[in-house]
Length: 322
Ligand SMILES: Nc1ncnc2c1ncn2[C@@H]1O[C@H](COP(=O)(O)OP(=O)(O)O)[C@@H](O)[C@H]1O
Ligand SMILES: [Mg+2]
Image (cartoon, rainbow, N blue to C red; front, top):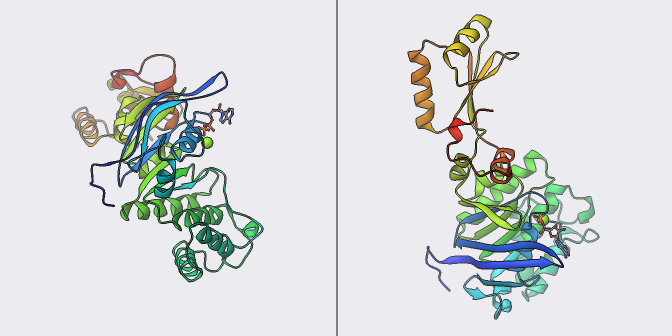
């Protein structure tokens, strides 16, 4: 089956799910083009895993028009299952047996012949740098190795759409970067990746589009840049070594937030090239020379503060000084 570039790998309209009285997903809309990375971003308990479980046929929705890989989840879950791979938030690998045995089990589940199963397992173990560990029980693996094995197992069935539920939560920075590299390689092979994460930097690194899930609804959707421009918190920080230079700059830059102790000024900014240039021009014109200039982009906290802080998202974050 061929898919055109603008075909949707995942499409959800009016997705609802409650557990008892608790509304977890309250009318979610998702549209994920084939061959892209889509990130569902949200804090603990936001409903990310619930969304993944529904879209991967593990549990059913209360309502919604849902299509994955072009198949209707309500009428053809079997076809959806054949098109997808899922790596859960909590590892599905069996710790008592070896990595290789886990892979061969997976190959059996996918009805590969013994020979084909061994070939695919060997290839994936190699690809995910698990050859040395392959004969050891998984219980001896590090967190990063377990996640790699998890993904390798997911790929045994050569799925075109992959759900990764918090693939890097709890990993050390190096394993996190390895995982990011793996995800990039999947995408370059044309696989569609649906990634949940609590980390904006991760979504920023990997995702073509990001949806922020909060209180059962999509609070915002867009590219990483679009989301960050929605929120205050981005700023340029100027630090001065000389207290007199600091005082004179502070007197000139009245709208900058002061940090008298650090001799630093913060100017709200989205970090875009255009804004940076205008700030630099302006500092030059005012004859201000800072000893250090750093650009801070908003982080997840800023995004959630803006999207869920009770008040509306400010239209003009430039005017907010923190
Ligand atoms: N099977 C279940 N029964 C009852 N409540 C559930 C069940 N699964 C999830 N929840 C609740 O739904 C909410 C969202 O959970 P989850 O989808 O796991 O969030 P996330 O993955 O974003 O951390 C949480 O409040 C959780 O306690
Ligand atoms: Mg979860």
